[in-house]
Length: 166
Image 1 (cartoon, one colour):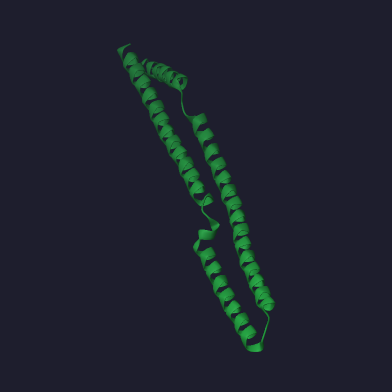
Image 2 (cartoon, rainbow, N blue to C red; image 1 turned 60 degrees about the vertical axis):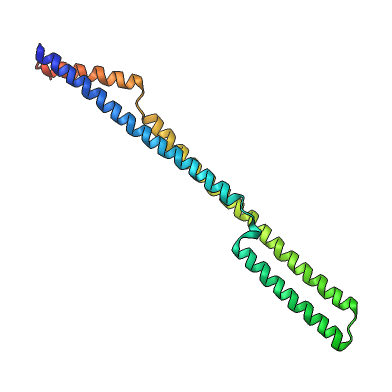
């Protein structure tokens, strides 16, 4: 009889400890996944809100375009001075160059918009993965009823073994 009670007590303790350990482990994993979600959101916000025209590649493209335009404007002014061109032809060249710069800036803006769409898409995919993982962890996390059931089951098993029934 004493052996049965000791077995029941040890079984109950083992059931409680095992369930609590599993719960603690899964809660820790849940906290980690929630932190991952926060990190993913912060990264998305940082990358999404970047100014496309301030990126190094865009700045280089704009600088090269500006330099090419300056060179073409100087050449047009020089040609007009030497060959006797009109102010209208120089103005037309300048307008064409301004349009080229505008087109470059528009291309950068369009690429920036496409980049933002891609960033948002990647974030949504990552968020969905993490939400799925969280749902799975939450489904497997023992609650108070599971813990009580394991304690009672452990006690009954220990009592049965202690009485020579197991």
